[in-house]
Length: 208
Image 1 (tube, rainbow, N blue to C red):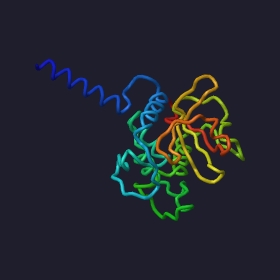
Image 2: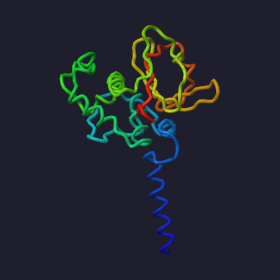
Image 3: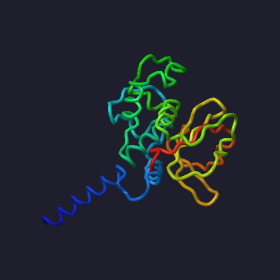
């Protein structure tokens, strides 16, 4: 009986470890796995401001925005908290972030700053994780190679709305991305983004 309870306890530890990204593989693979695990869990999209705890805060998992896919993948897959990392950097370097435009912010807000694509782009650029940035209109599936699992891609949807996703599968020429464009977390072929504009390509953590 005691042996059974010990085994059950070890199993629980193993499951918990898997949820926080202790599975084998590269950081990129862990990010990709953690992103794919959100499909079917996050089933809606809600961009409204919500107070969340700090650090480690989150809105309910069934909902969220495109940035939440990346935030949750980083927490689940790597144990890294973009809310805390971004907020700490913004406290020291607020003028390096686009907070005043377009949102009119005058100070960091730990409930929302990390959930905005433009702020994430600024953070990753500052920590040396940016691999490429478009200098003009580039088709949304035309990111310069190579792409790797767990790479983070950003777009302007309809050439105006910031969007973000994680490379989740690479099979030959086939590449898929996990993102939330309005219907919850979903996995979409990169070629489907062709009508939109590619903006940035990030590999974070920069050394992995």
